[in-house]
Length: 392
Image (cartoon, rainbow, N blue to C red; front, side):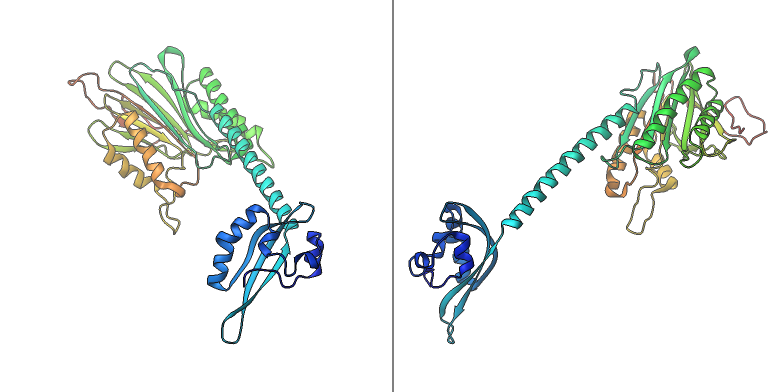
């Protein structure tokens, strides 16, 4: 049981380039190992074998007569006498050169895949950033904030938003979500963003803007690869103590209005249809007057479609409205920060990218905290001075 070789077969002798006379009764098994192999054999392999009586599949390296290293898998079993006393150690050696080559190739392929994934992630991140404004503009009397939550770093999402100046001191803004992911969605997103900006310069009426976008998308992507999106477009007209905001929606979730008095409501636009899906799509508008302390939040559907349990339950619009009521009153920065924390809390339940855009009217003075008003009337009804909903 001292490890001296008592018997060796021809196969191992051939691998090592040695003769039977060189080994039997003269050398120990550990003598056939490399320096590192001997150290491991003495400190780990042999002690475990003595304790357990068997040890298998251990990767070691043997050293041939010409100095060549031979990767092997070693299995040893202690054979005992009838009364349980150790008699000899039977060791089986498997040639692991093919396995070592396979492991090296597997490692190389894994590293190459990791490098490729990192490259794709960098490309996706760069492309995603090119589809979003690097910063939001400074709008006098308006506080703006935004957040983009990426569900997957491997694919480009179709969520987008922007805020930009128009004539006569007015501002345009939009937020939307293109169907699909990847390069195809990115191309549609780019076309959508530039079409919205160009159309609003020509005619800033929100319904007209979405109608122009619908014409472009329906014409460009009809056929075997139809593409559509949900969009909310806003026309912001600043005033002395606040602003007027007219929103037109094409199949998009309703914006939220957080009032300075601590209430919150949805700015609904019933009847607005997907943009790009139909030749003659209909879009709905609503107008809200915002006063100091009021904040409007736009968001994409990744937020309300987040999974909240293992049974597939979704967060939903009702839960989001309750969240807004608990949060109000809050400025744009505070609102977006709270939504960003909510998105982080969803963790793996968030399957889709989510974009959030908020605009608020800061308090100018303690005595100037009047709240604005939002009014929605049915199509064809009388509209008050504060606002209206219309469909076309």
